[in-house]
Length: 602
Image: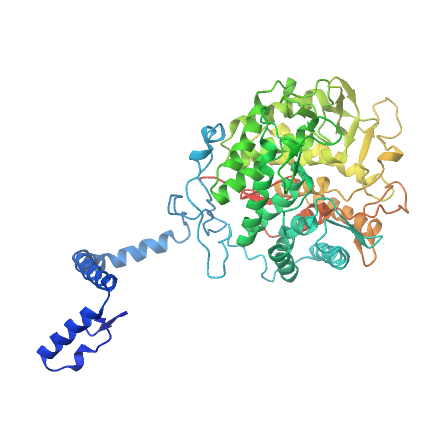
């Protein structure tokens, strides 16, 4: 059955051309016979169309007459507003990820304090949005990551390094978690192709179309989380879930959202505790959650570094359960006693309490608790004030309890409190996330002294590289505080390894973007050149090394997935001259360098 316009009349073709009849009586009989041949459903549809046509004609004709006289004024107004587009308000008929440009990014309604504190069910404004003809979701910006772009020599060097590592991984460890470049084999941790999932958005940011398509095809056809294997909630969240979420936002490919939801569902049993503090591990197939093998407590940084990812998963799926469980963890940590805003590094999932007399540090097991306090506030469009307040209080505690100066050159460093009381001048390389986080907070309106401290600590982190024979930082550094000491830095033999970590180049990116000081770029280039000289394995990518104090360090036979996910991505962005490539007022990086959108109302 078809409808067509013929001259000025609406004709419904019932299988007979009524205009071919001259005799009106014959025409009527034919029409009656054709009508009787129709089914009841067909007759009902035709009647409905006729009724709707008559109703609409009463509105359309006057509207056309009116619009004819105002069309010129409307066109003039559209020309004026073309440079000041305002996104359509988010409502029940709008898609979850609307296609909008870099100048007017509005994703979801902002999350207010009521939503964060127990009203997650009310903050989901709409069901999932539609797909385009290729089965893709619209990405969150109109940036074309795979368009040919101008790259400076430093960026090209980073791309070349990534491609070398990727080629080796694909040749010897494809679909496995991580490459062992010396033995030309692989390591299995979670058995989910961790390097692929961790590298998805790096492939996009670097514009590597072919490599990205290979990775996407593997995710579509090979990736499964139906594994009888226990995984660490924190690590798989920041690496695999974060990587899938970011890849979805940057490309709009729905396969990444589907896989992210599957993984998120399999992680939910971790949160089935009376205290609301999650278990550290869960079996992906059986859903059995438990404490870590090494003891009854979880790491504070691990249980508190979940909200960015689970909040984002709620926003793209419309299901409030993910944000709800992670929010309850955040709420619980907020009300626990925290002298000076600082937290011990262990917490018990059964009691929900910190382990008494645990070490206080911004290094291992403590670091990302503080990082996510700030970033949770930023992600919600600066609506989650409890998170910001906890962060500001913690930074005051850091300045009062943990900041010291070394001898003889007065390098500012962040120490630790052993058993929560005794100061130790030990600083992990992991702490070098802090200069960037402080700078990010200052950029978002926090006090000026945060930026001053950021610059001082950035210099110290650079010195941890510069003063080593390889120009690469050790994993752990002790700072000399004895008056008259000849050297600021002390590196013990067991601490001298380098794992290709990203924290220093991450902070260099923030400091460069917020100050424009080119020395931060130059420092990053020096670090990259040291990676090239001492960690590159000919034809096999890169490996962590054992001793940064030796000009001939031995390899540890491990290419960490975060070297591709974080270190090289941050270096590429540090050397980029493109202000529209992942702007920091539109994206917030999770602790594994996966960019997620900032949800705001501007």
